[in-house]
Length: 312
Image (cartoon, rainbow, N blue to C red; front, side):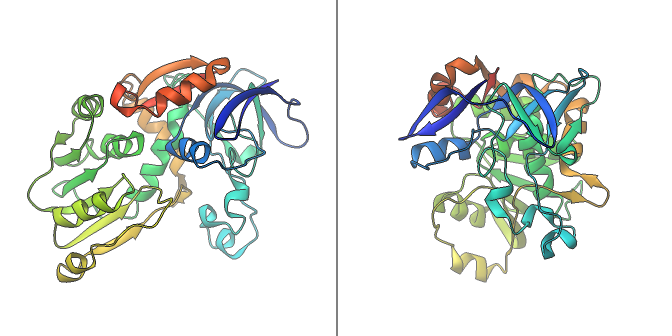
């Protein structure tokens, strides 16, 4: 079958053996390009595995599914206490990093990774479940009330996903968006632009020192910053402002569950509740053979890309 892999800072569509062994075969119908995929390619990561962790497809019986693209060990201390997103396997448990991912015609995953989709969610859109789950997990750490003032710094797919959850329930949600396409998407989701004044919660989704400094400036005394970005390199903490305002900082990584509900299931439910989201977030769709072009498009935020999707 065809699959997307990276070598020498380039993505290539190559022929690989079809997946086999224990697990559930999923025929991939949509695979989103994440910012982490772009970083791994541009940084020259020598991954031997197929890329892609934002994945949806169909089972052998035709049922449409999304994936929780991780395979935690289930027996380490983190898994035993229920925090399987922090499994000691780390990146080795993640499809598209330590395991063959979903930028391919097929993927094989454990049954626990399957997310059955509501009837009104199209499989071609359901690769959005994964970035929405990232937002769901982080926001679930916070005690946000309907009257809270919330700002989001960074309007990539995760920042906009956070806005999509929040604007259903919170009166004031403002987002700092750099590019016109992101600004338009934020407004269509229901968020305000250009945060100003003081906020009870600030969600940092850009992953830079400047964004973290902006987040601290927007906080009122005693407020909370949620780190929802991926920090590939060190950042400078605005320690003076953090200390003087006695700010709380939460860091979130991936997804697992809150109570009995998995974050991926909450994400699938949001897609069902807000059917307009795919048209807002997915800006480009390309065939698997055009993976190189798709990665180039995804890297050009100024040209209007938000979520670029490969469709095998």
